[in-house]
Image (tube, rainbow, N blue to C red; front, side, top):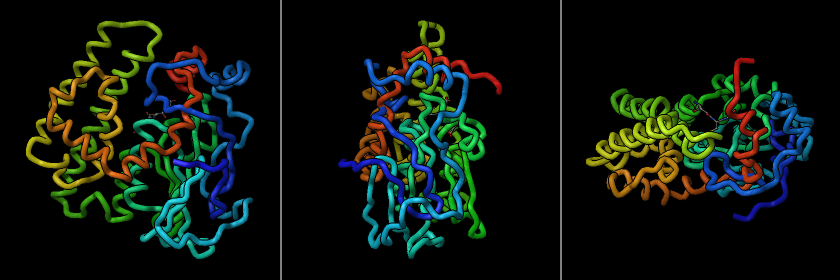
Length: 329
Ligand SMILES: N[C@@H](CCC(=O)N[C@@H](CS)C(=O)NCC(=O)O)C(=O)O
């Protein structure tokens, strides 16, 4: 996908451009290679959680962006830059210069980040990307913490929240539910159907995501090999894949119809090799994975700023100290 130099959209709430460097998805990364690691001094200060010199991403603001407003987007075709995606909305009400105000997506290219980029793409909502480089500690910037107090991506600020006022949301499951309610897409209003979706969404949030994340950690990133932990989380992933495979034996998607539950799972299931899972053992899951990855919005969501995560060297001790040595602040 062709990308143009970094710039912001110039719409309401779209100020504060940040510097970007070529990056690689942190959790989507294969074997690490030497690459542009943060400078030593910067690494040190980032490991201490200090905000970097550049302006942090912030809440949606009523102030106009510093860049001049662009002409209204007349079609649903996405315009992409290294960090900005703009779409015309079929549902958004807040408008700037005749177009819907974009949702701010605080994002890094990881399985949890992809949940929201995929959902925004599926719903064709206008959004701007606020990159949060979790390899250099941007998740500790006070302005980001004001939106996401758990210092984790993803998070959003919707300038057109309930009552037409801005709302910030963290936790990918809560964001998916919010966007589903907002748009009426991929999250049914019917209570029985909604419970089906919620069960599998929570299954991902409390099971597949955390267990796969730990499998990735101990299998790939941990500075020491811990056989018990590797077996524990690989086995648990295997159990969860079995649960998912059985569920998909007699229905196309986890809750029957395509929903936010499927979107929540795709990033993690697509990383099955990192969890040492053989899809030949899970034919229904394998079929589902193929269906999901063939969806253009899924492909776009997972490709969003993928190259921008390339600078994070997960074997860099400073990065490891920052990501894996976190304690209460
Ligand atoms: N439960 C959270 C988990 C989010 C999460 O773990 N995000 C990771 C990236 S996949 C992150 O921001 N890590 C930053 C860090 O560890 O400091 C959610 O689903 O939103």
